[in-house]
Image (cartoon, rainbow, N blue to C red; front, top):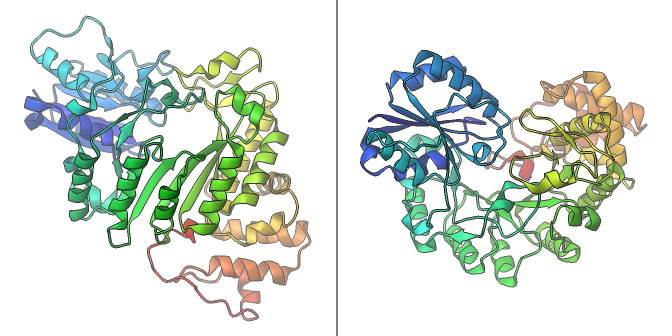
Length: 499
C-alpha cells in the first residue's frame, strides 16, 4: 500500500515536523511511504501531478491556517483526476469544528495528534475495516509510545531549511485566542532521548533549530539541559524558543547571558499590557515580572527578542494598544510583532462575540473585521500599520533612523501618522523596494517632520551601510562624502534584524 505524506508549507525554508512524526510511526507501511513537501506558492496542479505520479493508495495532507484555502483547491484537483485515491486530512485547522473551509471531498479527517492515529487508520484501510465515521477524534497519545522524527530530516533539509524540534507538547495557560489553550496538560518527551537525537542532527550539520514548544522555560530541568546542549557547541548556530515572559529563574538567566550574538532568539507573547484586557481573555499578566525580565534580556544578554502584540482583542481600544506599543518600545529595542486577532475554531474567544460585537472573517486567516471599539476602517489602518512597522522597525534596515519619527514623543501616534502618509504614496503595502521605502522615509522625516536633511541622511547611512557589500542609495549619495560611513559588520552570518 503506497502512502504519500504531504503539506503546503508557508515558505520553502520551512519544514514539517508533523509529516516526519507520521512517517516515523508508520511501522510496516514505512517502506512504501514517502514525504513530499511543497509551499503555498507552488502551482497546485503541479503539486497534484507530483503527488499522483507516485500512484499512491493514500495521501495524507497537513492542514493549517496558512494553507487551508490551497488544500481545498488541491482536494478538488486530486479527486477530479484520481477519485479512488484515499485522502486523509489532519492538523490544527481540522482538529476543531466548525470547518470554515469546505473539506467535504476528503475521505477521512483525523482530529488531534495523529502520530499513531494515522498509522491505525492506514492499517484499518488495508484490512478493509475502515472506521464508520469520516471524522476521527483522537485522544492524546502517550509520548512514550511515539517514535521520534529527527532522523527523517534529509541532508537537503539540514542544509536549506529550518529544523523544527520539540521537547514538550501542550500549554498550561488558558489564553482564549490560542488553540494551545485547549490542551489538557503539558507533556514532556524523555529529554535524554531527545538530546541524543539533537546530537545526531548536529553531527550531520544542523545549525538552525526552531523549538515549537509553547512554554520552553516552564520546566527548569529540561530548559537547562537544552541550553547546556547549545552552550557546549561552537557557534555559529541559531536556536529559537518561545518563552514565558514572567518566568526566568536565576539559573536560566545565567545561561542566557553566555550565548553569543545571533545564536539565541526568544519569542515572547505579550499580546497586551492592559490588565483588564488580559483578564477578558483569561491571560495571566504579571506586569512587574514581565518588565523586569524584558529589561534583563535587553540589557544583560545578546539574545534577540520577538515581542508579540495583538490588535483587536475584546474591549481594547486603539489608545490602549498605543500605550502597549509605547511601553514595549521604551523597554526594549527588539522586534515587536504586531498581529491581528483571529478567531480559530475550538477557542473560547467566541464568548465575547455579543458583548463586544465581534465580527470576524470566515475566510482564513479569520481576522477580526470590526468590534465595539474598532471600526472596519480602524482594523484596515492597523493592518497597514503592522505591515509598515515590519518593513521599517522590525526589518533591521532602519534600526536607528526610524526612531527619528518619534524621538521623545509617542511611538504609536507618530508611526500611525507615518503609516497613513506612506500608504497614500504607495496605495500598497507589498512589493515596495528597499530603495523606494528608504526614499519615502527620508522624504517624510525631512519634508513632513521638518528634520534637517543632513541629520536624517547621517542616520540612514549608518543603517543602510552597516552590512558589508551594500551600495549607497541614490537619494543618500549627495550626503555620503560628508560622513565617512563604513560597513561595521562583515559577512558574519547575522540576520540584519539582529544587529
